[in-house]
Length: 315
Ligand SMILES: C=Cc1c(C(=O)O)[nH]c(=O)[nH]c1=O
Image (cartoon, rainbow, N blue to C red; front, side, top):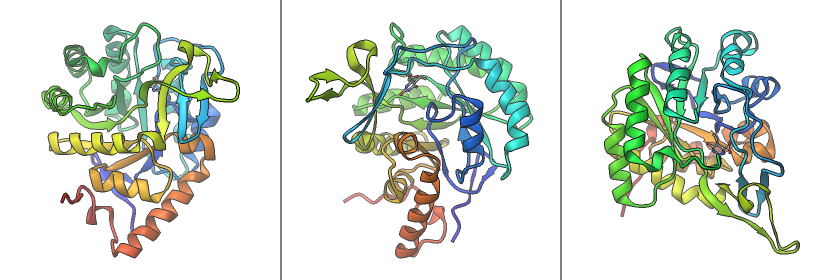
């Protein structure tokens, strides 16, 4: 039995990693992930400069998951670049790969960061995940919901970034949108993977006792994660798996146990990101879900991920 996999020509001990934004903002958090049982990790989406983010409380656990309106708080591009280049190699005891997430507030900012990151990628030290789906920066719509904007971003980044990279997508809810988003992604051979999904934007969770919202920013509106989003995450994984045959899919959304991880892989995910459950349980979640997935595979007679990857059956 092996959970090892190869992704973009890189070896992974297992398919699990954190979702960008979860437990990956500071050096301590990143090193805790580096030394966890995850197969890889990803940095908090960054902007060129340090960002404070939205006022607290901006994250809350909810009955079936979580809500967040963090507002893209991060330590700035240079911090994560230096961490990936200098610090990470010294703490990366299991030689796991690291992904680097960027989320500029403009096309120019994202393009500039991608250009600056490129040398680290050509040295094989990072894999870029371009975030086109942050739902929580006031006044900034999710780029992934504007197909022409997304095309412009991918064209600009592809023109300065010489390595394969991936895109963090918002959830879509309509076949016409799956088709149009996939058509844009398929224009770019350098887009080697698609991560589905980011949080389901602008949900509202209410506390019935206090009759209040759970978070402060945006009158309580925030990105929804956790079990609430599993069916939508699986649908987006499978929709882009079938529409982008030349690209890999990373699944994200609603993974709380080995069962949901199995579903994501069956739907077409090559790697699986864990967000809300990691936030709530800590890095021990990787040990638990690895064990649960092994048990499930054993019960079904599978010995490798490729035995069931992408093999979802329809009726
Ligand atoms: C990068 C900002 C994001 C944020 C955030 O920093 O508010 N929250 C999410 O659920 N997804 C994001 O992509």
